Length: 458
Image (tube, rainbow, N blue to C red):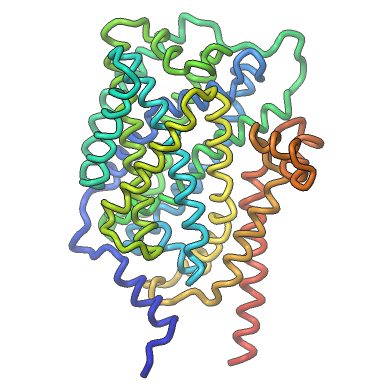
C-alpha cells in the first residue's frame, strides 16, 4: 500500500527527534547558554536605542517600555522551551505540527531574520574587537567569523562551554559597567517635554518585545538536548530568569548611558563607561566573543531549517550558508548609522515571529495532553499558513520602523505600512502585540472550522 502524505510527515517528525540516549546536560546548563548568548553588546545597544539619545524619551520611559516588552517576550520563550525535552524536536520541526507541508513558509522568514541578525552582530563584534585591540576592520572581522565557524562546526557542546565562560567573565564586566554608569547622569527626557511620551514608550516596548519573543523560533533548538525527565516548571523558571536578567540589566545600562553620540558609536560609548585600560580591552574582547557565539547559535538554527527545507547538505555546511550570507550583508551595511540599523533589524526581522508564535502556541496547547504529539500530523496545513501570513500582513499597519516609514512615504501603494503607528500612536508600534493576537485568533477560528469540516466528512 502506498504511503500517505500524513504518514510520511509522521515518520519525518519521528526521525527529526533527538533520541533520549543522545541527550545530556541540565536545566541550569541551558540557563548558562541563554545567559551567554544574551550577555552581548546588542542588548546594551537596544537599550541605547530605546532611550533614544537626546531625541528620545530618556531613561525612565525608555527603560520602562523596554522592560515591559522584555518580560512579556521572555514568558513566551520560557513557555515554548518546555516542549523541547518533551518532544526532542527542534523548534521549526515542532511548528510542523501546525503547518504540515507548508512549514517551509515560516522557515523562509526565519532564515532571512537570522541573516539580518548576523549582519548586526558581525558589525558590533568587529567594532568591539577593533576598539579593544586597535586592529583593522578586516582582521577583527576575520576573528569574529573564525569563532562563529567554530561554534557552527561543534554545535551545542561548544555553546555550553562558551556560555559558561562568557557568563562568568561578563558578570565581572557588568560590575565595571555599573560602576561606570554610576559616574554619568541618566539619559534625560528632551527639554520642555511633559507627560507620558506614549509613542516613544510604545516603541521602546516594541524593542524589548522584539529582542525577547524573537527567540521563540529557536527556543527548543537548545532545550531539546535535555533529558525528557527535565522538570517543565524548573525549565520555565530557569529560562525566564537567565534571559530576563541579562536583557534587563544590560538594556538598563544602555538606556541609562544613551546619548546621540552613543547611537553612532555604541562600542566607543561602552569603552568610555569602562574607563579604558585593561578592563575595557578585556570587556570588549569578551563582548565580541559573545556576539560571535550568538551568531553561531543563529547559524546552527538556520542550518537546521535549511536541511529540513530540503537542502542536501550536512547541517554544519548548511549553517555556513547563514554565516557567510550574514557576513556579506554586514559588508554591504558597513557605514550605516548603527542606532538606526539596530532599530530596523531588531524590529523588522522579528515581526514574523509573533503571528508564528500565535499559531504554534494554539496548536501546542491543543495537544497539551498528547503523550507523543509528534505522531499526530497537522490536522490541516492551510489554516496555519493562512493565519500566519494574514497575521503578518495585518500587523504591518501597526509596525514602527525607520525603513518602513521611508517605504510608506516613497510609495503611495505601501502607505498603509505603519499607518496606525504614525497617525494614531504618535510613532509608537503595537505590531508585536497584534501579531500574536491576530495569528492566534485567526488560527483558532480556522482550526475549529477545519475540525468541524473533518468531523462532518467522517
